[in-house]
Length: 119
Image 1 (cartoon, helix red, strand yellow):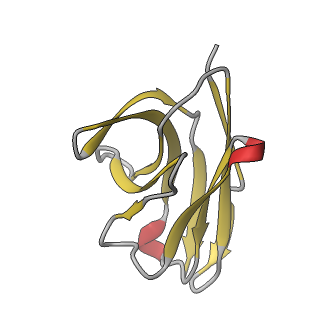
Image 2: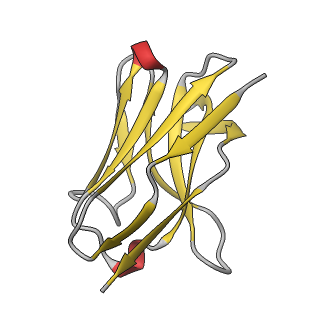
């Protein structure tokens, strides 16, 4: 059974940093992604990394502030968030899936972790 367990969310002041972790088990995936959801909005893409080559993609809104990394030995993916802004406040989800053409299809999702950035 596939499990994605997230940790590392919390509250931080603007300009601060947080690192989210997502430990994956029960399956093999080519792509791990991070998404976030604002209240009343649809989930939006934040970043993704592929397990093998480490190819990284980030949403324009977080480039230069966030990065995604992986630890293959621990089957864990990280979302390092720096220079956080109040508008980054959201529930953050990790997802596991496969590459499809130039994109990705995510079949599994974590439970979500709240990130709150205060001004």
